[in-house]
Length: 99
Image (cartoon, one colour):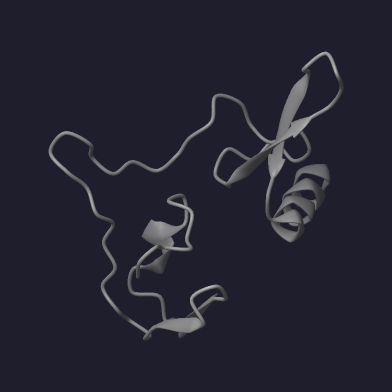
């Protein structure tokens, strides 16, 4: 797919996924489809290997270290925190942590 609408954090999850994956590219007026159980491999180069993005700190809400995090600016002084971009996953992790 060009350009890929997928954050590189999610690329490894697409490999051999049992579900049909559909992606819309509105400006291009195209729909991309990846059939179930398709081998998916991210492009990498000798001088720029593919790596999944990682963060130095966990989610400020649930403590997850294995999810894609969004950076949230808290105030004008530049204070920041990182939270899961998947709010349902974050809620589930928070509930599991509190049990």
